[in-house]
Image 1 (tube, rainbow, N blue to C red):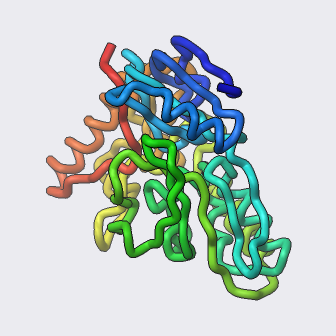
Image 2 (image 1 turned 180 degrees about the horizontal axis):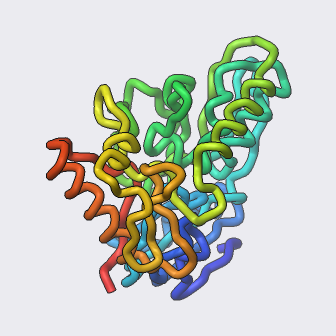
Length: 287
């Protein structure tokens, strides 16, 4: 193995909420070949989690059994492939948006508002400002537990609003994006980022939108209408800037955040009769 193996690694270092327990093992591959070799070396039933920026993830305080593989800044190649953009899974979404716009391609500007990596965006069909990741995907590469890399196409997955399901125990390692020729992309990106700064609590650790928007409505509106802005459990607080954000005010543990998520969901269900579905993933063991 050419990568870096860590034991009992605090996941608060690798998630945007800056909270959570430790992973039994944490591996940062040197490259794709090393990632493949490492997967092949693992016991057949070893639990594996693959994360990028950890920007849509809550790790419980008891930590993660098994191995976490870190992708950010590992698979980081970003290039033109003919008339397509080819981006590996560890590339930040915002970097893809800028790269495309600077070369006169339009259609990926919304990625500038997604605080994660290409791999994470593919895994959850991330989107914002009217765009969704899989709307611009031509094909992807995915790696299995056997270490084999396979090219797959959108029709091999069930793709919905913030959901993607496909072959089990495969992880995305790159994607080809099909875009359209056009100028003005950087101006659009600057406008979107200005809107994001004005409307989101970026001064606090957070994981982006906590809940999916129910059909025909917005989770933030429902949460705010229940008087939950500013509601706090321990160090976790419903943002008073954007009600669909839960922020770490400085000393939140994962259980504070999870309890507040449950409180918000239960309150909206009780008062509005609408069950909000989580957008963030929660993994790991309770303390």
